[in-house]
Image (cartoon, rainbow, N blue to C red; front, top):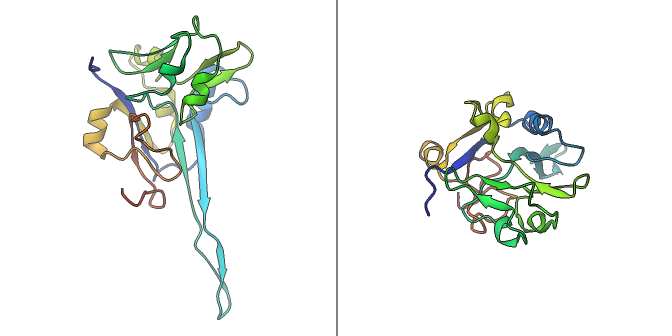
Length: 198
């Protein structure tokens, strides 16, 4: 059955400064302990400093940041591995959620997700993940990661609309292949994060 309106995130990586406001606001909203992060900000660095034969040093260092949460994938790897059927993908908006009343904490979803989205909470022995702040959306508000980004580098909405507006890039350097789960994410890559085929 086709989703009526698959939601997705848009990340303008070229604007991200790595401040982690998105991650902190998500943690605060969900009252997470240390180590549990539904939205994560990764840094990537490569290159070196080169000594010139004529003297002096030049650099070819490249670095950038990337904010990511659950991608509410077209083919989520977490759903088929859950032994109790606690994970489902909404037919209304494509959001993938973990029912906390059903989850038994097997952590198979944690191991299956190529993006590290499900997080295991040792206090309650259950896994959980980004639910797209559906509770806030029902009140007419945006997800907290979107509203707290000072650079306005995160947007959300129907993924097809985001693709029409920003393109079809859903994989950058350092990310798993987008052919594994077909993530519902659109990215404007940092100039140094583009894949050679992008």
